[in-house]
Length: 175
Image (cartoon, rainbow, N blue to C red; front, side):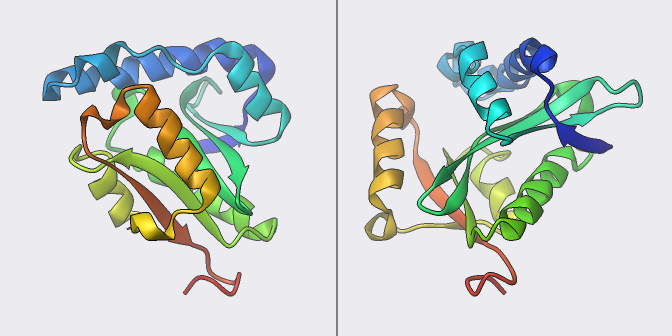
């Protein structure tokens, strides 16, 4: 599976991947998440122009998964990582996370951060297997607190959520 930067003409495909990936939330009693709209084309374009949007592509160079990130407190914060269910369980999500970690370390970021549902198997438990650790509430920076506040305002706190961090090797903060 090849990972490359997102092209502007692929932004609608990212929305399709997000909608398809979101459907599995319906199966675990989270229909509001399944029905939530993906990032807008404007939001996706902002990440793409900033060089913080990547896709995993199939043999035909068509996107099957994507990751978008932002710079938050000197780290790279994962805004979204989604894999189309037709391509799930092939370590594509992990490859995107590792790609971002390599990019982050090369740009001097000491860690990756994200927010996620704690009780969804393909969320916090999965990220823990990928090297992320929960951040205690007291350790959240003002910017991470602001992200959590926006999520709560959006209704995501109906289910337990956490902020997680993955230190990066070679940055003085990682292993």
